[in-house]
Amino acid sequence: MNPFIHIRRAELCDATHVAEFNRAMAYETEGKELIAEVIGAGVVSLINHPALGFYLVAEHDGNIVASLMITTEWSDWRNGIFWWIQSVYVKPEWRRKGVYARMYDFVKQAAAEDKSICGFRLYVEKDNVNAQRTYQALGMAETDYKMYEEMKPGIRYCLPAKTE
Image (cartoon, rainbow, N blue to C red; front, side, top):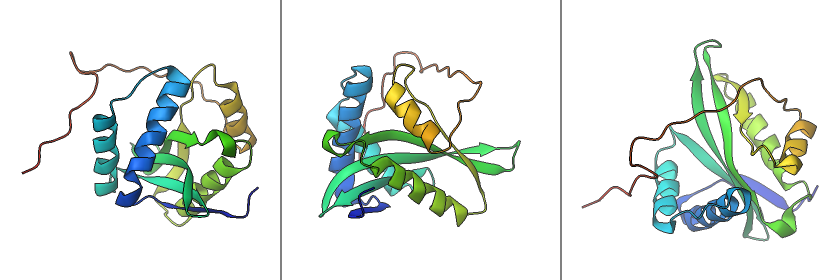
């Protein structure tokens, strides 16, 4: 592990980096090209609404080398909150160097300080074997659930809200 990696919550000044990482991750893992204006507005919106979640960034010498997003899910079964780990991206030259492990450890430490957090979840592309191995090595276990979704008719994304 690289001892010179600093993990912190993202701030508005980090939004451009996080949005670019999200675009790179979507293209690399799914071949999807995200619209810069939409993902940029989405990142800013989450940073401005911390009740919905937050981003973490990993820095080395003042340069952001990785990011991930945490969103929340209420579990009535457990009377607690799951943190969903999403939009994980580590710059290629920083992969396999323990950066994600440091970020995951930061998430676990933050959750240990919040009694309402009951666990962590994430989804991963079926063919992304490297990521699956990483998650398993850090103590996560595959579940029995499959994921389904339905978008509102005619909607691929939401346009940024107009501000006055």
